[in-house]
Structures are given as structure tokens and as C-alpha cells.
Image (cartoon, rainbow, N blue to C red; front, side):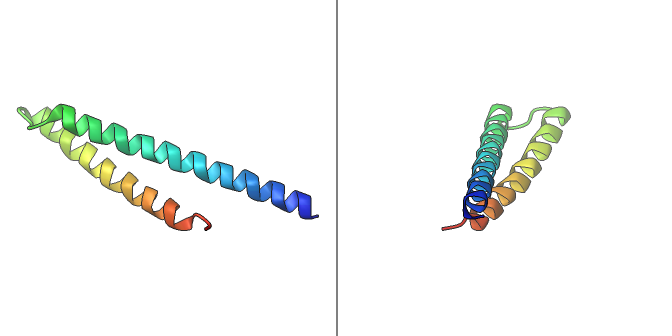
Length: 72
């Protein structure tokens, strides 16, 4: 049963790495969108800025959580 459990562990680590990479890509995307918007000049840009700032905060929190869950 040892090989099955180590295979399952490897698969779980791979999934965790992929999840972390996807979340980090999302963080980079939201940061870039905020940079592109810059100082909002319209109500639409202000709304976009608020939405992307909230998404950035939420996803950054998830990244930190996944990183804390990483085994050694």
C-alpha cells in the first residue's frame, strides 16, 4: 500500500502546485488591470478599480492560505 499512498501524495502535491500557480497568475492579472486603469477618470473606471482591488485582496488571501498549507 505504500506505493499507492505515495502516488496519491505526489498527485495531491501536484494539484496544490497547480492551484497555487493559477492563483498567482490571477494576482498578477488583477495587479496589471489596476495598473492599466490608473487613476479613474470615469464612474466605470472607478467601479472597475474597486472590483479588481477586491478581487486582488481576496485572491491574495487565498494564495497565502495555500502557501501556509504547503508541506515542508
